[in-house]
Length: 401
Image 1 (spheres, helix red, strand yellow):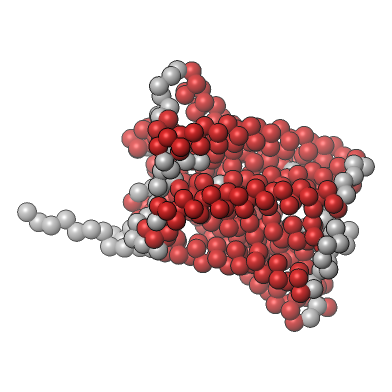
Image 2: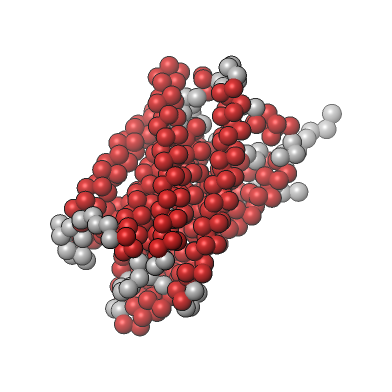
């Protein structure tokens, strides 16, 4: 019977396959977000897209076509991978490997599941905006359900984090500091901030003060918890890396700060929009420009750090273009996706809104091409990794005695 490498050596980190596909759906939504007019709404919906298709020129129609196809493909892959992972995870929980994992540093990899669930809810909402007519007329009724969904996902994440911290902090000697030589322990922060950004969505779209307030307060709580956990994990991990070097298979985690910054930035901008439209709070275009510039600067610093280490280790030669496989390779997708998304916000909500450049001029497209370049590179990477990990192969024959 044919199997895949992912099935034979399943670990919870394979939930990152779903996360990466969902992130790519978001990158295609950026085309619609910033190139399709959507007056009176914070996001474009089906009716806005149809209107732009009817009146726009060939370049806009091509962008809309690419966006719609890209969203459809990667939301499908996101959900397909999520279902596959949930099925394999259920079987994995019955094995001895699961018991060992729950008693090791790798227990935090279980947070990949709530991370993937939160991403899938976000991806489904994007698909609804793009493909469902008149969704905006009932969107206010959907926000409470969305808040409940993200609250349940956050609860799942917090419960797993509590189990891990309760185990390692209640008695000494159970946490292997020598194996803390990567940013793998930031996965709990990643899961929390993903739930937080989903929780903040109603703040940017709802007109009901109570819903906006709950969205802002809840996302702030989760975002703060994620930030505190991330700071502690980074400091302690960096100390371990200085002593023992960076774990080769966990090398891609050095880039996890990049998606963390993008998600945190989107959460902040959603909250800022809600404060402006509902509670008369104001921030200037210059404030947004500087906020996004600082976030992008942090990302570029960690991009340089991560690529330096990965290149020295020969990670790409072994695990991307070579024959070795590691579920952690999918952690390479999120940074490229995050850079593409935050660059789109920096260009449109930062440079254009502040009057630094004109929308759709040569400079605009020159910088946007960089964001699209990151996006296309991640599309290629996803299909490359999927072929390596999920491609079916014949089982190894056992020679007769």
